[in-house]
Image (cartoon, rainbow, N blue to C red; front, top):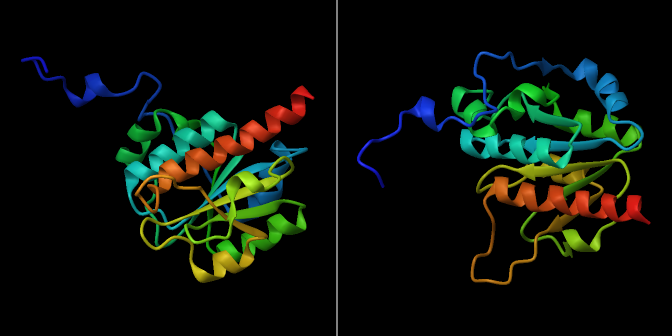
Length: 194
């Protein structure tokens, strides 16, 4: 630690620009957003993330993993705040973010479009590593502490957990999202190399 503390401006990631606009898409734009992800859309659904640092970290991981669209609920979740934007390091400005009034309805529309929906839950029977995640996919990550809401869980085609070997029984929501997103990336890369 030096004697000259850095200001918040100095610590800001070089890709973050709080002056750039963040575009929020509506439910009516879902088909258009899916077309941008064709032929294999890669969607991240965040079901009630309340911590702005978690949300920003999820956006950053999603952008790095090549997610085509991030879907967030309109209510009971953190919005795009200055902390979210700073933590996301530019991903909030570059990602396609859709705000949904009704996540369950959007999940049904995703299924109709041929997208498989995989939820994450600590108590799920299957591991994320046991699933085929190579096609059109939406990953659902629930809120801190509570996880996915009941109706969201019911709309998932599969629910999986991240295997835990240590003493911890769960991961931070943004860490779990990153692990699962990059398992999808790993499987997709394996197909493209074969």
